[in-house]
Length: 171
Image (cartoon, rainbow, N blue to C red; front, top):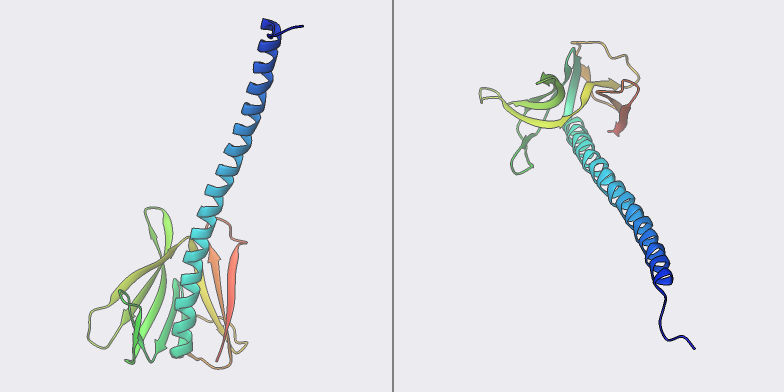
């Protein structure tokens, strides 16, 4: 009758236990990396949803718009206070402009109200182009078009020209 383990049995048991631990650490590491990758994607999606919300809200309040070489300009019946996100019923012109800063494309929202200084805020990074199509009309530049019916917004993302974000606003 044996009461103890031999040294060989002990070494084999420790080897098996260390292999199980190494496999579990590898699996946990992979899961942790997937979580941080997903977190970055979620943050980018939040930024894009904010961009869509701002554009949609300005277009719903707008009376006319025009496509520019670097963005979109909208004549709207209400201004948006950037810090509080509150709307005030004042006629303003809002311009969504794609700028390049430090080699990165960014989308900026500029708001002008009569003689008040222009207010600017960063909407998001990574936007290559923004264009609006109204009522099935083409995207001619510098032509004011009335905002009626279905308005289609197309945002081309920087990095991958095939990647676009489109949405429709119904008035």
